Every structure is written in structure tokens, then in C-alpha cells.
Length: 110
Image (cartoon, rainbow, N blue to C red; front, side, top):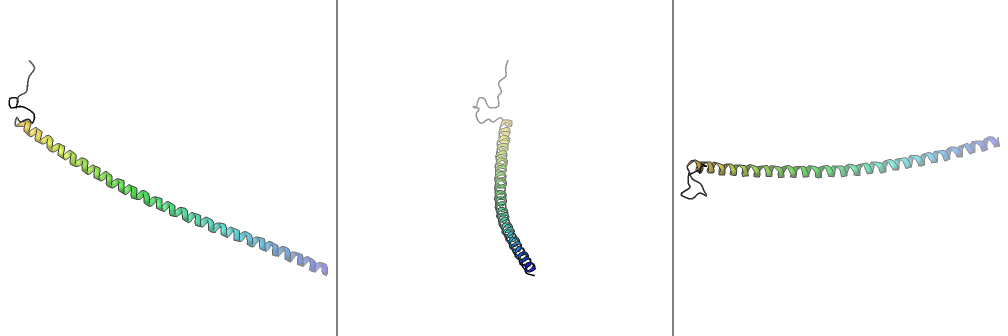
């Protein structure tokens, strides 16, 4: 009977030790999972910040591009106006740099 009791006690101790090891592994696994979850959340936050910064830069670049297009269109309109004025003056025989004797004249090669 003492052998049976000793064997039962040994098995109970082994079971308790096994249960403690299992609980320890579960605790370690849970802690590791929490750590990975926190790291993943921090990574997600960093990615969100990078995305917002990139979107802001894109918005700035679009605004800059629109401003440059507007400037180019204004410059083109001004150049077209100057060209139209020059054509109009040339059609009337006026030149901005010609002297009075050269107005409307075009030298020919003979």
C-alpha cells in the first residue's frame, strides 16, 4: 500500500511540475504575443505617419505644379500678346527699332 501511495504522490508531483511548466510556457507565449502586438501597432503607427507625410508632400507638389502651370500660361499669354502687337505693328509698317527712313522697307539682294 505504501508503494501505491508513493507512486501516486510521485505522479501527482510530476503532474504539478508539468502543469507549472505548461503555465510558464503559456505565460511566456502570452507575453511574447503582447510584445509582438505592441511592435506591430507601433509599426502601423509609423506607417500611417509616413503615409500622411507622403500625402502632404504630394499635395504640396500638386499645388506647386499648378502654380508653375499658371505662371507658364500667363507667360505664354503675355508672349502671345507681344507677338500679336509686333505683327500688328509690322502690318502697319511700324517697327520698334527701325529708323524713320527704314520704316516699312525691306532691302533686297540684287
